Length: 501
Image 1 (tube, rainbow, N blue to C red):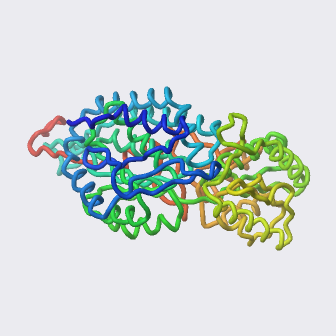
Image 2: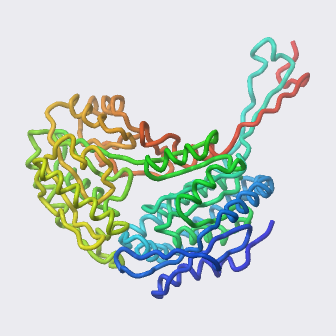
Image 3: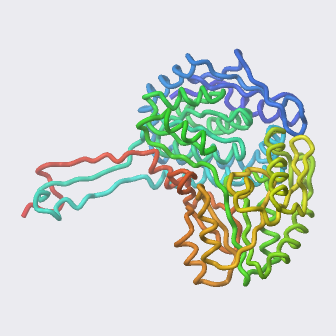
């Protein structure tokens, strides 16, 4: 297989440009060639308010070229032994760990995410690639018990998991490195070639992750990278050569992806409106501290970020005071400062929406105990106490630096309140009562429940995904490999390992 020219140099160029204050060029990777020339789109950093990266956008004809190249080379990639794929992914894990500081710097510039959070994201990238390597080594099949039934006597049947062929990975801006590592790593582990559609807000981070996998030894036939808007994603989804589409993003866009893709295998990880329940027996100080730390990390721009905290009425005022104090202690500022806890949101439009929703909640009778203001794209950590149940901050996905705190009287009632959301990704529960834990696990309409933690906690090797409008499929490497492969059966007539009588 081919190796693209200048792979390590491309990774160096992207990361070092950000470190030197230059504009990071985010090339396309099309048909084995890095391309910078042509139409471009600039990304303005939400904190710096200057151009920080420039992406080479795809034309309709290039979308078609990418799909055809992937289709033509899918079998060659699929012939790589699982051990070979695993070795490359382990190399990618080591590279991610070795260059975590440079990646975190680039993420801070493109997205305003504090470097502290960016370093954590790169630790997860390293873990994700390592887990994908382990899953590549586990790919196998089954010996089927055909001789257990009369018509199967005298025959043998076996299966193995074969690569699906061409995968499409459409990634979001909020965790651009790790969420791409999940999709690209699992797809390569499964033996597929992958077309990556980058988020317009994080083109350079995406290009750097693709370059990292290639620098680790992946053949160029294994991945392509295209930049552009929704029209590029829609054209890729509609291409008949695409076998699997993995998308992370909003529910509205996810529905559009499904319509464009048609009868294809889909893994959709969509929006959330995560609830965390604080029972009367909880360690209130610990709950307030955890909810503050995980409610405003990445300015709340996570599908499992703490959005609704339901606190038993007997301890509501006490929790609001403790939570407000914890949130007020967070340091807001320059995302490149290692001491910063809260940076910016993705852009000023998103920040203005969060502030407007907070003001609307106050008009409906809520109280803002902290924040409710913005400076450009930076939203001060905002606490909204006692909003109406029909307020936007309660019913819609905030995806910003705002947490609502609401009282409840009975456990059954709070479970019902949590389930009113059209989303169902993950929930948190603070209690020492095992009966409540099991009841919540059974009754809450979510894909995962975090006990004695907030909704915003994830281990990358554990199944992750939702129900209702939060999508379907599970995004852990093991489950994603299943989505990225197909079961192929071999039936040997007249040949039996079981005996013929």
